[in-house]
Image (cartoon, rainbow, N blue to C red):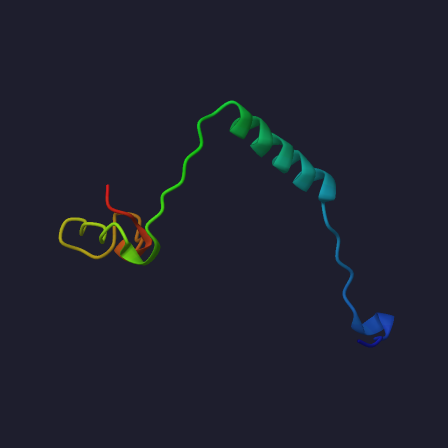
Length: 69
């Protein structure tokens, strides 16, 4: 570790209050919703199907980032 001159540094500001509010909103959503996750680590459950013969879906997401339905 070391020190630098103030003129060489860059002032950074963080909106911690806004971040905290977003976390609070997420907590409220999670309390009143059913939450689940998709698990297909290393294609344990098989590869996701091709979308219209392509390896990407309509949003450009690669099929290796998907799980079979």
